[in-house]
Image (cartoon, rainbow, N blue to C red):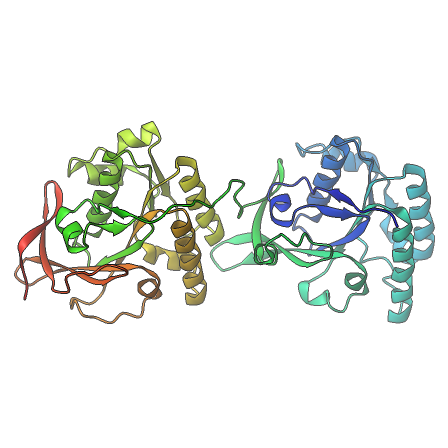
Length: 457
């Protein structure tokens, strides 16, 4: 028995998620028109040619090979050493059996290591179902003799895959789709089937949706990290930047903990987060701020009011700000931006201002909870201390909110204004730490938030 070769896709993100492909094997790349199937295939073939392999592309089209190469040359990754043998699409539909002979002759002439047939779904179009199955069984028998990595593209919807004879013959199925959520359109990749998968690979990461982009540089997955996202460190207490609060929390926040700061507008939620970040920057701890404003200037100006000159830390690389527009950002892309920023600066603190804006990206509450759970899990692994803010509609400090964020966070701090103009802070939850249950008065001074000595009993 011939030994299986291990081959890489040669596509950013795909290799990191799936690992290597086995050759000989057959992969079905399915999807509707315009989702990038041809681009995906040409990128794989170009990578193969650069590695000294023979690559063959057989399109079923009315275009000439010369015209196709002219189109493909606009792609920066394209390598013109790929063998292109076009077969007339209308003839292949009318006489698929002769087409099989033509394909066999081309394969015998080139003897490729990788082959793409693009697309195979029109073949046998006029056959009744039993004849179509026999036709594809014959094609599959031919493919087994090629001893190559073969990629078949198919123009079909996801729900059509189960009834397609092709999907039952191949070793793997990759499905590309375009989705419109009403606000924005995105392209997504899913691995639906994969034989011979590396047993050490995390199947949870493989069998899920990944958003991708298409451009002159080729096909690129948006939701993966090249670097190791694990860190080993025991949690320790870190200062919140508010001495009185640190005393209430028996020395501060745990280094891998998440804290939700909630309150009505004007209670100082953003000030709280900026003070937490300023404390970290003073200690030379790398920090990340996440907000949903398109410019950084308003955040910098607000910090400057309290004497926190955070712009100098942006310039030095100690502070990274992720400012995005939730209307135009996909959730997995946003999460990746945050994780990449954390890795780039090796962040120890994160301030996420206004998580309620996530509802614009994720109107589905279950998906929103999943996003927050994934991010919080990542922050804990990286031993990052995090502060999140969200508005609170009720003026009562004992309100039982149904926000999933409160269930997921380690700590909850509620801020409120009283009718007499005083402000009160209550630590309603603090995992792993004894804390004062009574509301404590605080003030927003020219140097930030300060806890007063008197309490509301």
